[in-house]
Length: 178
Image 1 (cartoon, helix red, strand yellow):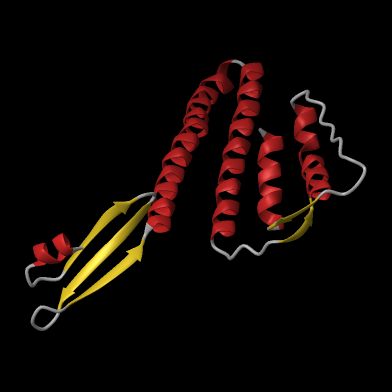
Image 2 (tube, helix red, strand yellow; image 1 turned 90 degrees about the horizontal axis):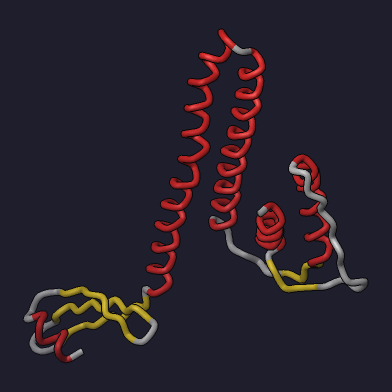
């Protein structure tokens, strides 16, 4: 701190320093004579949130590129196939639908995540069995379309946890879907 005050030499100064597992933002404001005001603020959480946000945008952009590229390629192929091969055109239309559904699911996941991040998380006693069963039921038709049998085995007694129900439901949904 003495070194920081010495380097400010009468000017306001702000910098970040890593201390153990935290990042501190240190602001110095020189006062009259030899007095200075020093403000220490822990910005670790803000930096972590910024990093997570950046990673999410980068990963989401990468994931969205694949179905968009597929839709563009399939639509170009469809234009040719319509005139020459109706069976191939029908297959391409099905693939276009699949890619569009995949893209819609990704966008829906991003919107749900955005809604969850934008509100305070209230943890309440939540019945885990019910969430697992409801999410499995919501995804059962997609599993059947993929030729997968989806079964849920829960313990006889209800398992309770302290959680934000929507967050837990989204987590279970994503695990089952994957």
